[in-house]
Amino acid sequence: EAFEWAHTPEERTRLWAARHKAYLSGLAMHPGCKSVTTDACVPISRLADIINASVDEADASGLPYFIVGHVGDGNFHIAYLVQDGDAAQRATAEQLSQQMVRRAIEMEGTCTGEHGIGLHKMGFLVEEAGEDGVDLMRRLKHALDPKNIMNPGKIFSWGRVEDRPSPLARGRRRPRRAGSGAPGARRPAGADRRRTCVRAARGRVRPAGQPA
Image 1 (cartoon, rainbow, N blue to C red):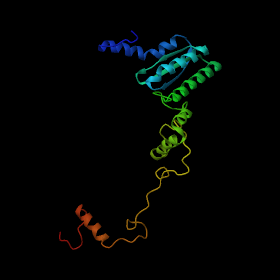
Image 2 (image 1 turned 180 degrees about the vertical axis):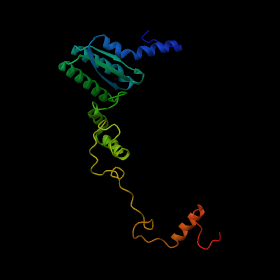
Image 3 (image 1 turned 45 degrees about the vertical axis):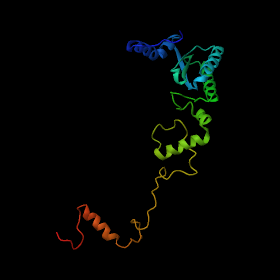
Image 4 (image 1 turned 90 degrees about the horizontal axis):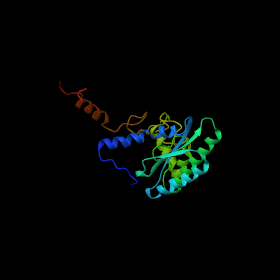
């Protein structure tokens, strides 16, 4: 059987324990190595294709690696193991990672299924969603976080909204309507009396001439 099914809580716990320890177990295969880890997600129908292609590239590179994932949703992780301080191995791992992520996008998948965009995949987000799609995300960011204090510098750059920034991002207020208290505005007839009656209804003052 290719799958091991868990039917009891104890069996599920044992399988989850293996999943949680997979990363450290992978590092233990080559003591002293660091990992360059990435993830991608593709339609289930393309999962075997992308894993096989990524395995072929990793084998050809000579770098040790391991693959884990929750593949039921098409998401998997590959960790390339490199010697600490070896710039050549690091560059090879980064190249393999980029090739794998770009392949996922070509297969109508996404550049990340779990790890997120962060810094490393900002360019891939543009490839996947397009400049206009990313700019729409940026405009929402400007509107909801005009001071750029929430996770600044991640996912996409702060620029490219200067052509028409949102009023909220620039701190503008809506223009006041005539009669709403703007300087020099003329109040409609009866406005003062209506305001006095409203205050009276709230228990603050009584209209002039009303007995106590």
